[in-house]
Amino acid sequence: MRLVLLGAPGSGKGTQAAMLKTSLGVPHISTGDLLRAAVKAGTPLGLKAKAVMDAGGLVSDDIVLGMLEERISQSDASGGFILDGYPRNLAQCSALESLLDRIRQPLDVAVKLDVPSELIVERIAGRAAAEGRLDDTPETVRARLRVYAEQTAPVADHFAAIGKLATVDGVGELDTVFQRILAALPA
Ligand code: AMP
Image 1 (spheres, rainbow, N blue to C red):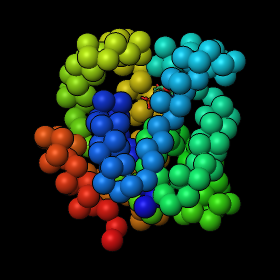
Image 2 (cartoon, protein in one colour; image 1 turned 30 degrees about the vertical axis):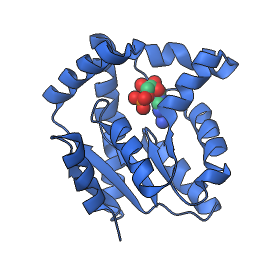
Image 3 (cartoon, rainbow, N blue to C red; image 1 turned 90 degrees about the horizontal axis):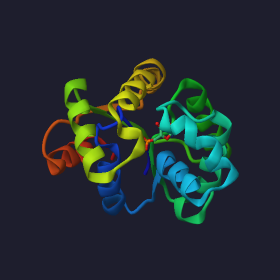
């Protein structure tokens, strides 16, 4: 299964992706995690990305695509993947489609987790307390939600237009949302 998980920051993508990984037996590829690992390792690329991430902006398309290509071409992703946090804008969407065409692994479905914005803000505040993510401050969260509305929401529209979008209600217990996602996946 080759799946893209879409949803605003705090919509539960990361948690659901981890559950899907176990259930589907394919790796969870999170561009946010790849970038955080590069920041932690202090690589030149990580240093470049850090300031943008701390401000809630989007890291440059080239940097993220390079990391994604490297990760997706590893052997564990040959049978499929769950992509979390990518694509974040329409340019990344075309880049992903070209990449998947090239490796002859077309996307099966994009699943969008739908969560009202009031709940998102509450959830991110909870995550900030639990995980201490530097980009979970109220100011950064606002910036990330704005970026999502302006740049990432059109990506869902694109997948809808090509008949590959499944929208799932992301409000409820983790397992309830998880069952909804499973039910929305193509056979
Ligand atoms: P996430 O863990 O997906 O919420 O990502 C955390 C931060 O990493 C985002 O706010 C961006 O700064 C950066 N990031 C993650 N994925 C991407 C992407 N596909 N394109 C650009 N920046 C990204």
